[in-house]
Image: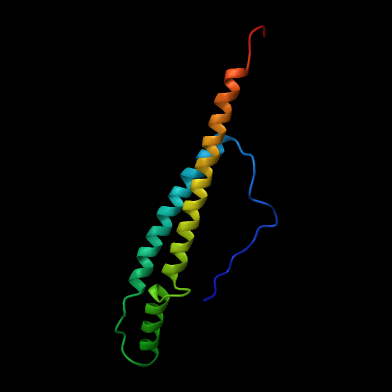
Length: 116
């Protein structure tokens, strides 16, 4: 299997979003990571050699084992890589939220709201 990576048609290095939406996205990414972890565990089950007999059944058993944990392009490898990407995205969201909170606190010190 080859690794496919789609590049979006826009620049993701910087974007503005409401902090509550970022916090919600962070939580949803955590849920997605849990799902990916479950999929990795299920793929590892596929990686066990299944004694299905000879002929086509034997080939199927070998394919399941190779697809599950068999190295380059295997389900486990791809899902693990995806999980790492999700963690990186969560880290970036955390950093952005921290910067937002810091900027918000700095601005609060200099805003005079008296006089209506």
